[in-house]
Image 1 (cartoon, rainbow, N blue to C red):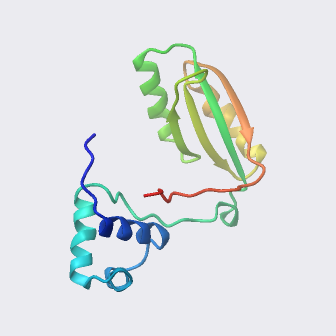
Image 2: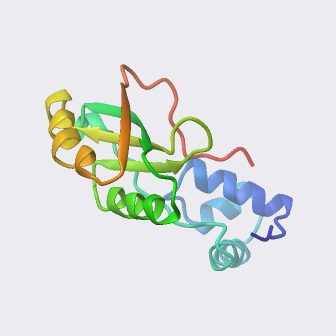
Length: 155
């Protein structure tokens, strides 16, 4: 992966966009001392170069009824390339799985899962997750409260 040149003005634009994703180029330009068109061109270049991936809407999971968050450490029986990719493909199809990371160490994957409640997680676990081929072990940790959750990168 190649690093792309990002100057101080680009960094300020990125900081503002992370803090306030819906802000427009005119407001950003006003804050950092650029014209709207110059700011828009920089934002467009950052998008074209893939630095800005998207600008998601951030929802409060509990207000939409997803009260339980679980971190699941998954260990597979075989470390063959086909097993890792087939597991990754399978969990990517589950909307309950928000994040999936391949790990080095004692376990192969870390999943962040949200469900309505513990009963719903139990159903997800028994009907979907544990049914995937090649699983040796799943250790689940229930989140009691969110202390910090951010998508803002320290640039």
